[in-house]
Image 1 (tube, rainbow, N blue to C red):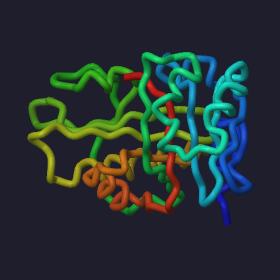
Image 2 (spheres, helix red, strand yellow):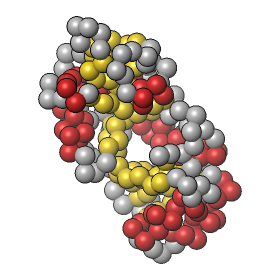
Image 3 (cartoon, rainbow, N blue to C red):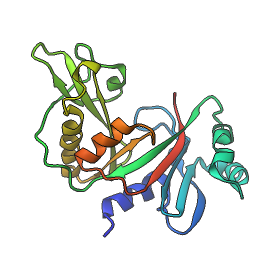
Image 4 (cartoon, rainbow, N blue to C red):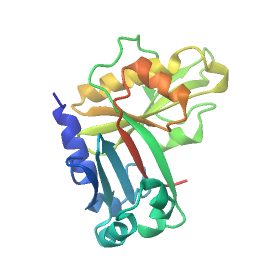
Length: 220
C-alpha cells in the first residue's frame, strides 16, 4: 500500500500526485518561491511508472507546455531553464528513492550546528546536521535534511575522502531516516543515475530503487 505521507508530500511539493499516463505540467506557487535553502527550484518533476508530473511556476505553465508537447525528454530538457525564466540555472536528473523501514544499522553520529573543523560548505545550508567526528573533533561524514514540506524530507550525505569505505554514510542515512519518520514525515533520497557510490549507500540504508526518477532546474 502506498504510504500516505509520500502521497501527501508529492501532492504538496509538486502540486499533483503522479497519476495517469504521460507528462503533466502543473502549476505550483512553491516553484515561484525560495525552497528549503532560500534558493529557487523553478522546475521539479517526479516520474512514477508511465506518469510524470512537472511542477513549474503558475505564470510559466503555458510556455512549458508548448516546449514539451509531443517531444521526448531529451529533446527539451536543456531548454527547460529558459522556459521557466531562469536560463542561468542548470537541469538535473536523479533516481528518486523513499523509505519507510530504514536498515537496522547502529547510529553513527550526533546532531550539531553545522560549524565545525573541516566541515564542507554544503553543510552550512542546514540549521542542524548529523555528523561523525574523529577523536580530535574533526569532521568525517555528515547528513543534512532538506525539509521540502511537513510530509517529505530529503536526505543529503557526504563523507570526507579520508573516511570513505568505513560504512559511515549508510549508518548516518539510516539514523537520519529514523528521525524523519519519528517526526511524521517520509524520508527521501535522490542521487544522479551514474553515482553508484550514492546508490550503494541508499540501498544499504533501506532506500530501494523502485524505478522512480526525478528531474528539475536547480541552482549550481
